[in-house]
Figure (cartoon, one colour):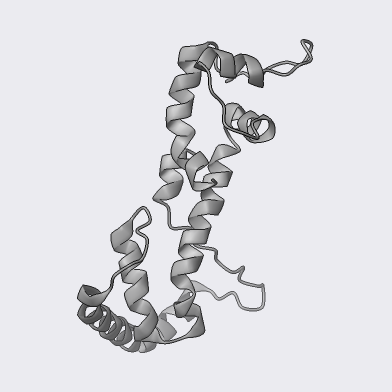
Length: 166
């Protein structure tokens, strides 16, 4: 996953519907028709409440998708549940998890996290040489940067996620 995409994702974990809870579509629609007006009304009430609160919302830190984070912050007092109060912290924490996941697909990022423990000063070619496995028989990944220029390109791509992870 590209690090930039990870910053703009809103992951949703869906619970598995057990075999006992599954319904045929023909059984679902009558219940839906009955519940639909109540669900829509509740949703519109929530949107109205959030829109009224939104101008007063100020975030200490503005994560990527700052407007969405403000909406999450406005939902918390509107719903006033423990889950809603923890939503913004969970959203920001989840973006860090996604950044780490995005870096796992980059052999260069993985090697940087394994090998670089203090500030590095040097050229991209020197960094590539330092990160290459010491054992010459070890094969580099197919997408390992071929030269210093490729290292620079990859560093620009993964830098936001590396910064997010500290």
